[in-house]
Length: 489
Image (cartoon, rainbow, N blue to C red):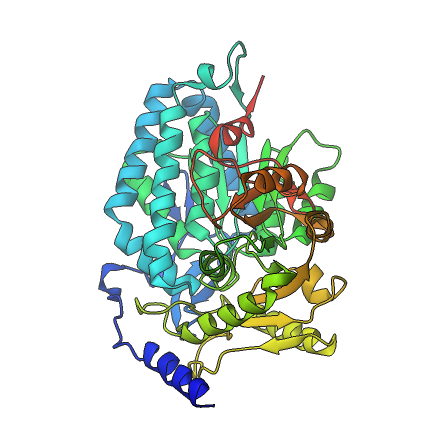
């Protein structure tokens, strides 16, 4: 009992850092945002606007234009005109100069972008500042370098752009997803109409300001805002040649049905339920920290989050104990505080969905553990949660929760854990923790996942492709593969 009290005091002390909030002064957020069409900010023909909020405080940040079918048509026509009259025939070296300029401007305004990403999305400022924005700039730099080297990317072939690309991105990595899609599309000579998620439009609109200031020819990149109806109008527009979508599997299937029988090309990056596997010969402390990074530091708001943990039976007790101890030290709270580990859930709707699954997990007989911490009185917050005594058939083990919720199961043999990890409708990513290279290679060849990390997790690089199998979608973004999605031969 005395030891437990000592640990509790230690954990409580760890959470009592003095507040270290990032200043909001670096970010200029307009009271109202219009649609970015043909190089200008235009009022919506719909005449409608919607509020976007800070999920940590529920305060209104701005009012954003809602594009209707006519607005979508304006944006697509602007993209088509820019494609046919300016962009597709521009030498690759010249296209690259514009993209390099955008990358440098992103670096120059990195602090502002990080602050806005955190205010609008709820993720901790450390993640926005140290991961999201640097990766955004790196993707633009990387694809700028390819713009005049496509003959080397595709030797003995004659790559040609597809035309107008409709791109729809989610709320979990708003600016990073925009970079993943815009950079390779315009590097290969396509033009773009991008629609960000309705709950996190602000960094995409800030990117529109950067694009405008960069001097990129009008219409090459258009950014329109709205909800599901806007996205549907964009997908169904007859003058769109390519659709790139990141989001839920349900919406991805709807897109597939909508474009059936058309010549539209598509890449879909959809849901995930990633398996993170710890063998008994793994560096346990490193693996535990990798698990924390893979599911909790991002609020579970990652399609590749390692939300299913499989631990070899002989070290199961040790791993669970260390995970629980580590959860006790995590700080949940103000995303703008540099001490915060876990920020706000993106929306009330998403928080309600997570809480629904917590109820489902308990009803299924799983044992739930949450650290003894107090959540902020306002905003959308969820305690990091571990479920043990989980069955492979439980819904919390099979369905994507998209929150800071980890399920834990044990295994004995390599073949058993491969079968369990693959027993999922998803196949986006996985992690393997072991000191045996042969074991790593065995699992990477047998796990049905598009990305398998070894002794690390959630590592991204613009040179590496990313994408999944099964209901996690098809096609790849990033790397040389990301270029292939935007060319024809």
